[in-house]
Image (cartoon, helix red, strand yellow):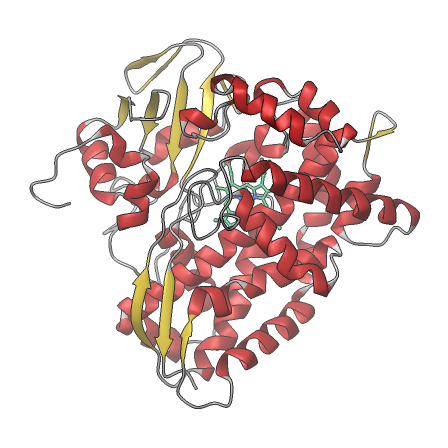
Length: 442
Ligand code: HEM
């Protein structure tokens, strides 16, 4: 922690802070030491408890009866909260006139907005909806994807290498973005030619105020156009999979039934959206963050190179990359009743921000937490969350990263970090968009 650091409430949440420095580790370290469960009132956000200790996040996440995901599963700037923007809602209604089904969804949306997916739900809905696709995510199913993933990864790395000579590239945009995207669109059964569209739409959905990601020249309502396009796309996909079901995840979602009926329209489309978005941005960020950390710690890169044939070493390294990067900034919970935590009285209705990156550098859990150590064991990080909402795709994400680095590392003769550009971040936990430009890959 910088010696003269002075804590400001904005530091834990403001997108421009994340855009400038990445995870605000000075603020988190200060909080863990001085005020680990602090009531903060940042500008543009409704006040919340900043939860920074590993143990507290576990206690909260494992107790969904007291700490609910509804109505605010993430901390978002106030102006984008539905109750704050009646005028905007009217404008949205106008823009949806040509989509009667979407209008119907909006009319009943209340505080939840147009998307209601697993992350927004609490038991019993959460339990029932998650159970619909859980069988698809079982380890044996994921393992069966390994060969296909190896092939996809090989062609991505071939493209990266070009003719084998020295070249400069943007690692995030040219490389890291592809493995998770290609996999997810494949799982969902999205045809290859639609990949760029899905990438664009999902980027826009979580772009928040990041100008690089927004629809060009768009207004604050650009999100509605994105949601509209996603709704259209997945409506068509559903119709197709109901007529021609396959073994893919899209068919599970399209044909899933609760109490004998197909899922309601809004929840159905939201399911595709959460899988499409949660699945690629996080893995892309973890791959980029991992590569970045390896380049900044050449002795760790060398260690990985020397042991690249040992699957256990690569698995540990991947786990450390995931901890180090912590791709999801925060989720939030709302207290359903008064509760005492760490000596503080949390009142019913108050929000809590769960800062995973703080938990993942908690000195009470990790030895020398600010050392990037690919042999770290145990590594009880919370980058995938915990409790009933714990990441549904974690086995897939781990496997994908293991395959990627197992293939990449032996093929690189030399790689140099030229520049890292960070962008503003907001919303669901879109981490700083970290661009590595690497030189000398061959
Ligand atoms: C939920 C992180 C990859 C699908 C989550 C949560 C986190 C997370 C922190 C919230 C957990 C909580 O509230 O306790 C990550 C990271 C990934 C990754 C760091 C990559 C390194 C994936 C992939 C998929 C996926 C590849 C799908 C193919 C989901 C879904 C949820 C979720 C559907 C919602 C689960 C629920 O609310 O029940 N993820 N994720 N994630 N993730 Fe991931």
